[in-house]
Image 1 (cartoon, rainbow, N blue to C red):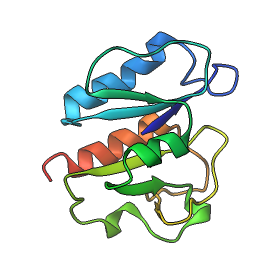
Image 2: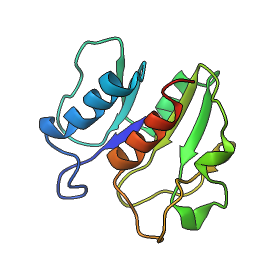
Image 3: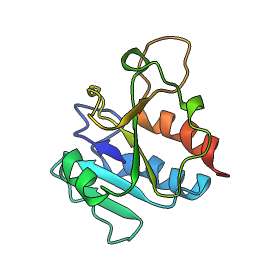
Image 4: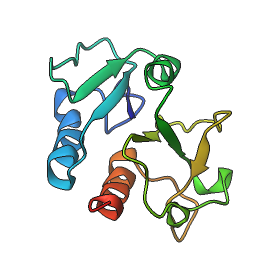
Amino acid sequence: MFHFDEWSRDVWSGRAIDLDCWFKLRTLWGVKKLACVNRTEMDIRTGREDFEVFDTVEDFMEAHRHDQMIQMQHPSKTVTTIDAIKSPQTDTWFMFGPAEGWDNIAGLWPVAVNQRTLDSHHAPFIAAIVAHKYRNS
């Protein structure tokens, strides 16, 4: 699950072309399904069953309340790294926050990708790392 924001808020969002990295991720790394919290005025619904669009994180969480959810977080907000997850369950959602970051969500497991500094990386970059790590799980 990822956020799609206005381009002025996140330079990896707001335009149709910015969705391409997510669709390529699904294809290249075998991600079965994508979900998006659309915070733009654009209608990004594709009609495809493997791409869900929600208005809020809460709507997404309600729709997938029986699935495992892992909140991808900035390293300064969690001590747990992605290496702690050996093999995710079949119905596991990795949730990538908005460009401005987000607080830990109660009841979810906040996990970060190891990195050398505490600078933020864009969600598509982190998503590619996560997808590569678990592509054969």
